[in-house]
Length: 114
Ligand SMILES: [Zn+2]
Picture 1 (cartoon, rainbow, N blue to C red):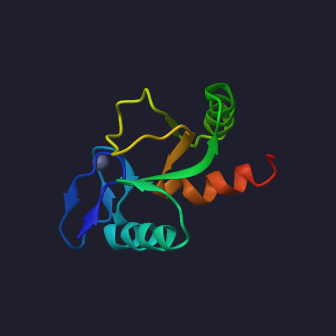
Picture 2 (picture 1 turned 90 degrees about the vertical axis):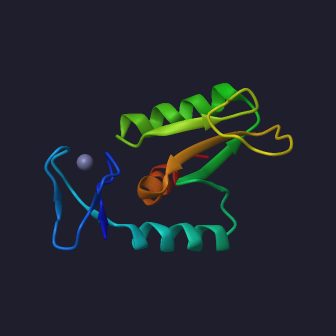
């Protein structure tokens, strides 16, 4: 089974391209395997989003989201006031989340950012 990374449509074996989104399909297993590896490494995962960095202030997180966005990595801020993710318990940190397919690129971009 293959999936379109954009519209998430499922495709039968043999298809390699989503004609709707003009993009190559991905093997879901790759993403699942990577998520499992990241969990093992201690990363926080919410659905297919990975926390790449945490901050105590929202403005700091927004700078990172801007930096990633400038490099075409879509990032979201997860904070207490955010209703996008439903999490149990309380959390005081502001998290910068990227989708798992952008994780490597995001880490690369953040490597030089202290
Ligand atoms: Zn598609």
